[in-house]
Image (cartoon, rainbow, N blue to C red):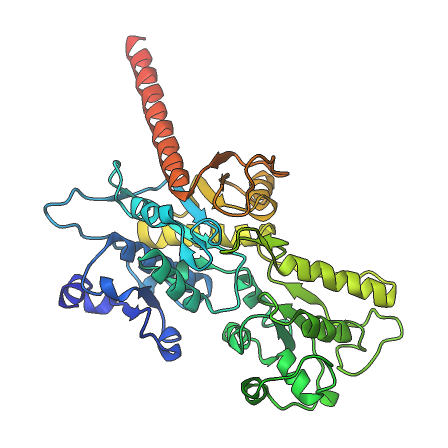
Length: 440
């Protein structure tokens, strides 16, 4: 640790947290850089990228200004060739099926991250972020998980969950129902985003145990759920933050509120169009796990809720989804990368090209392609599909990628080689033009 403390000036020091020993208090003490314990005695170029992305995230949230931090690069030893940071391109990665499967890293993922962090023939570091539809935990907690899985340092500033953009809704709604995830984690996420009054399905079941005939709270769930008088509570919106752990109970409660008079639980609207709006953090029908076949996800729950509402009321239910392939997620990612470049390198622009690596054609590839073709994108987003997740060999994706590769390591090498071929071509053309001018 002494070597690390000497490396970071005291006025620029960022706390490092062990992924095993971190507490919730540590996580919310930010800005924090998360890393596995075995790296506590070593310095890596990944730390500089992680720190810079954390700074950028704070800027986007309005927590600090440019005056609070000065641009700084890594300091290589005298024996090492200096690493440069790529200025014209960057990478964005989905996680499940690309870097991780069933809670364990895909073998090529660890090597791919090393290549991006400077272990490559170009002696170059390439900026990268993670854009996942997964959620149900704070971005800080997800970073701890990913740090252990990839055996590297990851910053919350590099991480965009499906529900991350929902933080922008905190000022719009007062009392909200938050659905999904394990235990009280989604309530913690929502309160961390600034939502003032957060209700969970457990609170409603505790208030009226007959709400879900076949779902009883465990002793721990009962103790964690809050006592509320829902006769005097108006729920302004419903947010499905993560995959449901109790489809039957959650669907029943969601439907009750959608059919209520203005979000008052226990009431029934005569027109069935007075209920609160409902937001899903993403719309993936299936996702990749350790099972040999894909498993159904939040998009399936969304479809189910809409179908049940139609069956019960005869009316269509309008719901809203965040995450990929929604363009807002890609806009957020672009702003994050642009802020990082400005703060660390004085480049006030987004990368010319962002390589997005995903495994799901319907969300990753579709979103990347549609954002690239939209008038909202001023730069080139290039889609790369890997075969380690949802993709099925021998099929033709409905939304074709710019490039299909076997795994994430191939994706990284392809993007880097493509950029350097472009650079060599541009240099050659420039040299030829200069020769023509000299001859004239």
